[in-house]
Amino acid sequence: MSQPNQFSLLKQRRFGPFFWTQFLGAFNDNLFKTALLVVLTYDALSWTTLNPSLLNNLIPGLFILPFVLFSATAGQIADKVDKGRLARFVKLLEIGIMLVAGIGWMTHTLWLLVAAVVGMGLHSTLFGPVKYAYLPQQLKPEELVGGNGVIEMGTFVGILLGEVAGALLVAHKPWGIELVVGGTLACALLGLAASWRIPASPAPAPELKISRNPFAESWRNLSFSRQNRTVFLSMLGNSWFWFYGALILAQFPVFAKDYLHGDHSVFVLLLTVFSLGIGLGSLLCERLSGHKVEIGLVPFGSIGLSLFGIDLYFAGSAFAGAAFVGTGAVDAFGLLAQPGVWRILADLVLIGVFGGFYIVPLFALIQTRCDPKHVSRTIAGMNILNALFMVASAGVAILLLGQGFTIPELFLATALLNALVAVYIFSLVPEFLMRFLAWMLIHTSHRVRTVDAGRIPEEGPAVLVCNHVSYVDALVIGAASPRPIRFVMDHRIFRTPFLGWIFRAAKAIPIAPAKEDPWLMEKAFVDIAHALHDGELVCIFPEGRLTSTGEINEFRGGIAKIVERSKVPVIPMALRGLWGSMFTRDKTNLFERRFARGVRSKLALAVGQPVAPETATPEYLQQQVLALRGDWK
Image 1 (tube, rainbow, N blue to C red):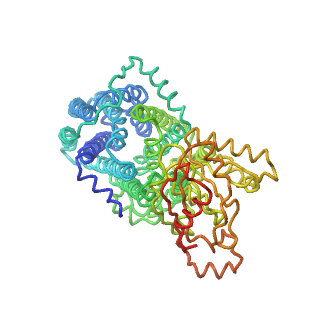
Image 2 (cartoon, one colour):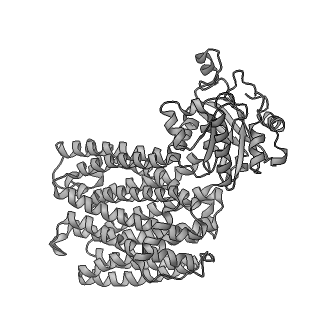
Image 3 (cartoon, rainbow, N blue to C red):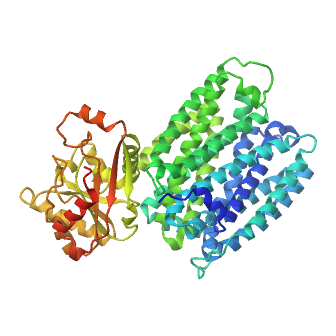
């Protein structure tokens, strides 16, 4: 059956009103902030004597300050209170903040506008845990990636449209200020109207007591999240993206004015292409992930963030150093006629696309792997980290600019630092690297189809058994699984140079024949029992060796020993179509086989019904695997 389109969720009450509530919130945040930044960049003298570059990094830092201070408390409130009710309170708060901002605009009082910036940061702090805890409560597991993609797309489109509206409205003479005041109030009222349609979403922990000490609660939140290593490192990876994005976005006003020689419409153009890129990348995650949480996209996204960030440095430096055609500031259309600008815009779009590949799977991973009763507080902990990283990004930018760095050099430093951070995180969580290798395999050399992959249990222990066709069997099976798998493999392959590091990092279990190393064989069975006791998935290839003919060899007795110790279900699986590929022991001519199979050959993984441990004999499981494979080797 074909999967429903992710946009069909917008027609459903469980998703649509919530989507529009958060969309309007993101739109209004950015309409207000951008209008203020444009005024302070292009009309600074009538508002303040402070340096525009300082303000462009300071104001975003003030906006996220409430995330540092109150995210933990916001997470507790979201776990204790119905999320629809909380969303309506947040929208009422937004109306009050926009009234204060309106007074600041009309009276030319900068400190009131700065207070409103902090207030909108508080508004977003309270809504943040609701935003990502609501989705796993209302959506099915197979809808979660698509739902997150639509939410991320909506958020960044809201950011884009808000930034465009803010820049255009405030520059409209002579009524720019009045249009911003009216627009922000109207948007807050529309957000309140949308929030009334959000369905009831019962609190997962209504008995929770709200801590009066937000700092102590913040520490408890982060300490709790650290207990799940994969979730916590994913939170750090998510926060790094916000460091990267915040640092780049904060430079856009001055980059547009001083390096691209443009007016405020050029600033809007940069925001537009960057935000469209992130929206596009977020939506493409649904197609590229195959309707599941595919964290293999995260390293792919990180590679793109570095490559195109580095190229943005070269493109920006070349443009700034070239002779500029024309005099004075140009508008967006005039900029498009300048040589070299399309490369800059392409870099920004692709940074956005790969940013979407990076961020959406991380969100979905955090939502699905954390404690269900602690989702809001986990998201709040992530928001604390996000805020700290974004404050740090503002500090780093101010420091480096003060040391004489140009803005293109700032882009380069960020891209290079991203590469170092990626290597560090992926070395700590090798599951990302394993899934990336698997994802690359099935999207380059093969076209993989899964049959009944939903039979692989999403929780609880089980043993997976499969025919052993090639050296990449584990990657194909791992790519189809919604969760990590402990693979049992020959000790010689386990010790292969370089690959051995990956196998050890993935917690594979080495095994040897009894006549060769009885101690290692017994240790393997003990390790398998421990893994199953801990609720993990274990995959074995009962043939004990790769097929040299394409046929399934006799299943050995190891599986019987495993289920005798651990009474867990056994899931038979069969690989189809791998025999004859370059990864098999087929002795016929490799080039002839490759030509016959085509550039991207088809293969499939078929998953059978769970088998009770009492009936999971080697002979019966071999029959099941053979039936699943059929005649297609």
